[in-house]
Length: 371
Image (cartoon, rainbow, N blue to C red; front, side, top):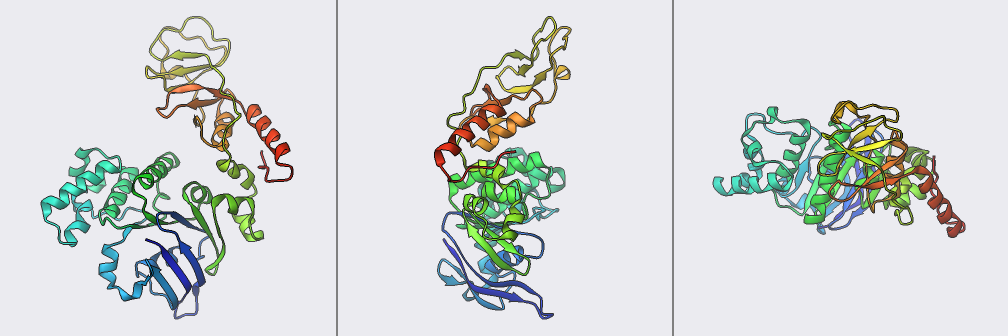
């Protein structure tokens, strides 16, 4: 179900213009991210889709029909909506929070709760959490419940207003991964608001950059916005390191993954360690590094390890490989398979060599700027 903004303007009684002549088409089954600084009209634009805000002029079309032709409560019940703090009802259990929309739509209580249990599993939450109240959940768990509740409407459209900005970076990355996984299964039409350009380019099929005053500055694929900003404002907003971000769209073919010496935690390690040694658990997943010159007395434990850097999933874009290498204390980017098991390591030098060779072949085409 596609969404279209046709000449949409929102002007408040005091003369403030929040959105100014917005023309934008959100393709069916895609993720479109609205990004920009505070005061650029991102949230206002989003809320005009479900009539939480009414436009001053212009049209917002949902599947070709002006949303103003729909009764607002009925329209909202048919559109999933996720906000920053999850917005859960504190006096209801997790299961009943998720069942809210099906109940409002006339479902029986048993059927609604059964659907809620299915959705909790879909967003990666164990069934036993359904009996808890929101206050007993972590921030990341609450956001997953918020997503599950939005999906309960079973609508093809999902609106998400900075849903992950209130959680820590590690949890945020996990929630982003979860959203991409869900989208690959469900194929919703998603409009996502964020102020974070990294989040925008990671999640969006299309990115709309808005400037203060609610005017659309640029609309295109993440790669287009990073590689060809239309003006100084967009170039400044996406950052001077946009070349590094551009590596998110460059595949890692040509980067050789090399073997690395490993030791298993919980097993004895004798003698001084000469070179960096990667510690893995019984399943072969990385746990950290043993520094050169270390002497382990007996079994190798977590206390003996230096924290590792980010992990690079084999076959992913070059940005992940370079980040893993640069963030590793050993200068070796740990590469893992789809199950998180160690495959080997890569170095920054290998990645830069690949980039240099590609730049030579492109003969004037886009060559990512590297640190």
